[in-house]
Amino acid sequence: MKKSIISPMDITVDELGALMDLADDIMKYPEKYAHACDGRILATLFFEPSTRTRLSFEAAMLRLGGKTMGFASADSSSATKGETVADTVRVISSFADICAMRHPKEGAPAVAAAHATIPVINAGDGGHHHPTQTLTDLFTIRSLKGRLDHMTVGFCGDLKFGRTVHSLIRALVNYTDVRFVFISPRELTIPDYIRNDILIRENIPFEEVSRLEDVLPRLDLLYMTRVQRERFFNEEDYMRLKDSYILDKKKMSLAREDMMVLHPLPRVNEIATEVDSDPRAVYFEQVRYGMYIRMALILTLLEIKVD
Ligand code: NCD
Picture 1 (cartoon, helix red, strand yellow):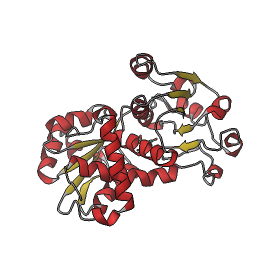
Picture 2 (cartoon, helix red, strand yellow; picture 1 turned 90 degrees about the horizontal axis):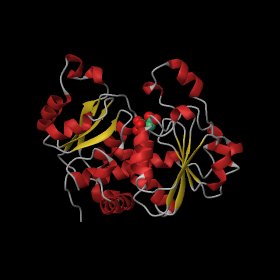
Picture 3 (cartoon, protein in one colour; picture 1 turned 120 degrees about the horizontal axis):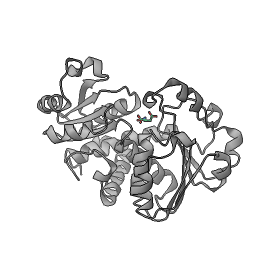
Picture 4 (tube, helix red, strand yellow; picture 1 turned 180 degrees about the vertical axis):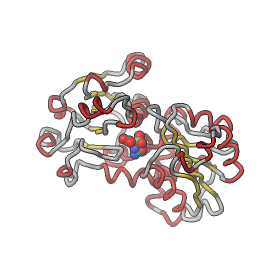
């Protein structure tokens, strides 16, 4: 495995399989791993707000017996004094054994990785990538559906700015017979680089539609996303688009019995709370899988083996 994980392309299909096998073992025998990271420190460098991802990394390290430190917003770091990401990460390399970084600027974690002497994990950079959310999504799908191939996957919502969408598409194209249905308003369709450089170039079947109801009955998996308010240039557009899709009980009645609903969270309005009790809604379970796959990733990047 590469020293740092910046995009989903940094992990091969085989490495991914090994990570998920390790995460399975950790879920089954947590006590075996409870001291695997004794004496190690994870730094969480969050230049952009997050609850889930940061706490998921921290919980993962704590459950491995390690310790954590860091900051949860740019204003509580020296970035406000004008320090560069390269300098920040050089300094952190002396304090911690591994770090997870979230940054509003696309490419910032890649710059960090080039200057760090410790592994850097991208915990989300702008509208670009979010590889550990992708690991979370893939591990959830494999665990609950039993496979990652032969599937029709629907992505719904903000497909333009949603980095979790971009990363998951990138990873899923490596599996056999995966087809995509993109459901979004015209203003929020997938970026050209995904359409042209990945889907068309690799001959992956996909369609782009604007009505969720029309395609729901065909989906094996529905990945819902929130409209990414913080990446809009004006509030008016956000207000107009924010409630484009709301998944409710009525729409769920059109879906297959075994269709799974995923969401990276936080949810705003796009899934009515009445859907939460539907057994097909797995977004809260997804959070748990996320912690275990991050435990597996930390162990692997630190090259710690547990027998
Ligand atoms: C996502 C993100 O930060 O991109 N959240 C997460 O990490 N679970 C999705 C989002 O913010 O909408």
